[in-house]
Image 1 (cartoon, helix red, strand yellow):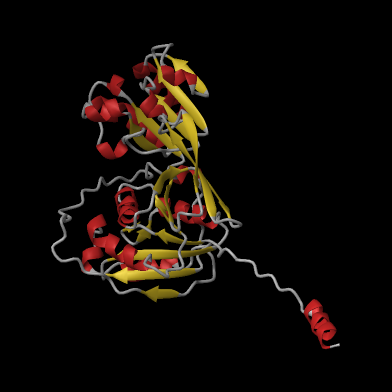
Image 2: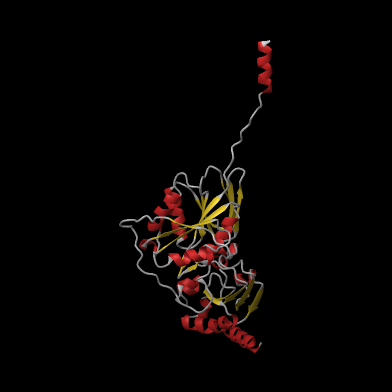
Length: 350
């Protein structure tokens, strides 16, 4: 009877199964700012981070005179779950060598972050790969879409390659504990503000003694025109505009009446017609405005990589075989020195 009773009790013992759970994504977004304003590219990076489907924490670093104001603006951004900020005189003009130790500390063992996100800016393109390399992790740059699979903690990205002529699909597997990526700002809308605010937390800075690189100065091109990277209308000129005086005299009246930003091809920049900050293309700025006007631009593949996602492309060129006409929605084969002034006069008459 004792044996039968023991077996009966064993048979009635409930079976319990335990399943391992995968933690949800938690992104750390590096928010860049200038003159007290958060960069538009960082707002697009925040939108991309939200598409991961988990928590999003922002990070603001800067000098003592600027962080407080930026934090007040960042706290109102839609999509943020929390906000971290760190203040130091070394962060007043942040360079990768001084900021990377702070990120390494935030991403140290036990940190909750699964993704690190930033815009594809010149600063972040140096910072994020440096931190990723220090942590022996890969980084994906200039992504145009992101999708996270919470069931196995893998993330899939798309990014343009071969000057935008092909799209690569890149999958970061679960074995990559922290996934670093930079975001093409034209592929994601800017995150808006909201009425509610998130909590902010101060993080002690990490002072770097004798950094190998030092910031010397920042040269900014001042203009009353819209910022090239986020303008809804862009008028760009190429090498056919002969010189800097002709470049400005031809494009400025058209840009003024359209309320447009001015851009330039690499050939025009290399020839000294326009400042390097106005270059559009693979090695310049990537833009996707509602209207893009290419004046005297042949349409080299490197230039097309920076503007072919524009909603409406208008080209003026006297060469009917110019490659720019292959991507243009409207094209005019004409002498730009006659066509542009006539166009300006007709726009003024409306």
